Amino acid sequence: FFKEEIAKLDRETMERIYQISTEADVLLYVVEDINSATQIFELLNDRGRPLTDLEAIKSFLMYNVGLLSKNPNQIIGNIQTNFGEIYRLIESNELYEKDILRYHTIAFEGSDEDPKKYIKTKITNLIKKKPTEYVVETISNYALKLKESFTIFVEIQKEKEKNKELSKLFMIGRIAPFYPVMMKIKKEKEDNFNELLKSINNFTFRASLIGLRSNAEGQISNSL
Image (cartoon, rainbow, N blue to C red; front, side):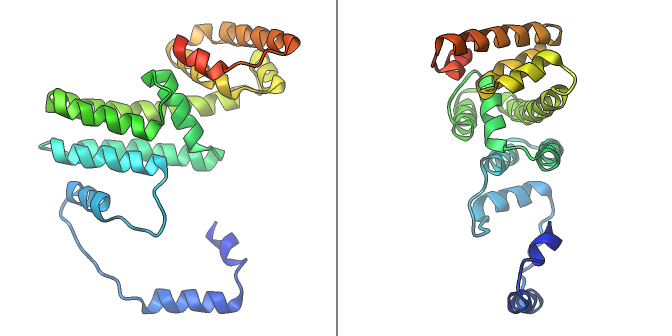
């Protein structure tokens, strides 16, 4: 990536970048544990651009574990591991993270609210009403389930080459509204996955014949 981007720069720009990187004053602030580092990142992070929704969610989860748990390092480490796997899946499969966040929230959280707003509101409310251990466990489970959702999404993409019904659905198009229910069935009732695909294909075919224009994602969200 860096080699490709650097190759696009002219000599003057490259010399400027080199000068800045070699002459810049760097402030080194060493902290003893990951919990402190997480809190500093949450409070002081400023890279010149806003965090992505996925980055913001990760930061929010780690920050709250740091505040709530007496021994947060292991839990924060697990969250980092799960999100690290998510980032690898995004990079290697060229995924659009906001879409998958939305599919996950619909399928496994039962909400069509903005994913970042949803999880922040949920955790904030739990902190007010539930025991600390329950909140920390919820945060940890959310990170794990989110990783599983990204994994399932990739599995569905790869399966279309060998699954006739899935290949047919991709050919028909307008597949996005059906991702939440496909991901949910793929994870929880995989034996029924092909039957689901057949039903979706029948629905989309009939809908196209009668010119049906409906909010399929909204209907599916309500049925999950």
